[in-house]
Image (cartoon, rainbow, N blue to C red; front, side):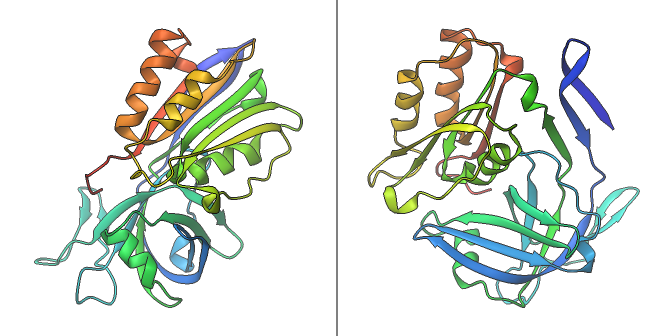
Length: 271
């Protein structure tokens, strides 16, 4: 299913593609600690054949085992929806952005930010190859024709790095791009390869808990937006994004159809 959401000169600039819901079993293949607070995990298996991720903002649900289990209970998809075995404990589920999917090896790579103690963070810290997880989704993809715009801007906290990295990799060579990423400090910065002419700004909250610092909003307010029509995407902690969206759409008057805001998480709230 495809729904067009905007056109320019008769050509579609953004569109949404819906995918059928599928539940899949996968095994951990590789675990990398990229920074003190950032882990990259690759899972794989034959059940991941047909996995689709077409847009930088895609997300899927990672299904984790409950205490005492070696693998999560993965439902069966039926015409009535997902069906679990009777009396089965449902898995813990958290949303993640695919960093990459390799259809040749059926390997899915995603990143986990270690925000203190939490089910997903605790699992990631002890993850080793061979452990079993499940996946559900993505349910759909928001596809942007970046080359149809004059410039691109992306901003978010460290949970946004996979989606920002994917967008940067998809930008046409030489396109103007402006990126703002909030992390705790310089040790959390990561390389972001791109063919675009990208101005990447890392803003540091310097020990403030993630989701409580105004530094990202301050950086956006101080930015001198370029002329022309751009596509903007803001991701990260939901409450912080609310204030940024208000500034961009209400105060600055940018067309909300060209501003994509997606809360990846909410301070103090699990899943």
